[in-house]
Image (tube, rainbow, N blue to C red; front, side, top):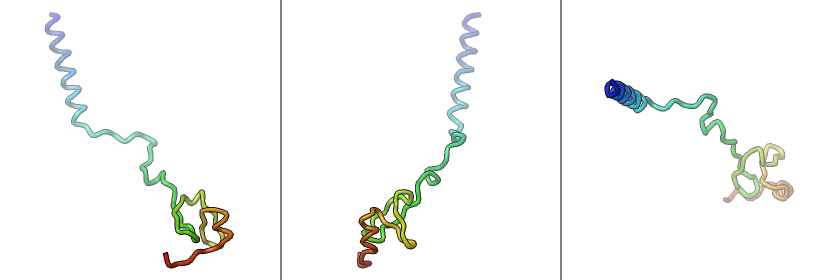
Length: 79
């Protein structure tokens, strides 16, 4: 009788694992794709470096990376 119960348990475990292997992993609820998490980037009008918009300084629809670059104004466009 114990052998029969052991075989039933073994077969049930094998069926359970085979079913789990065939399924694709479900995405977690509430998790957002990486694109939605990334901050929009802007380019410094003086030096051209890219930085997150929430860390940039703006003046007259132009973005700057530091206060010094904001005070110096736009740089040359030959870069």
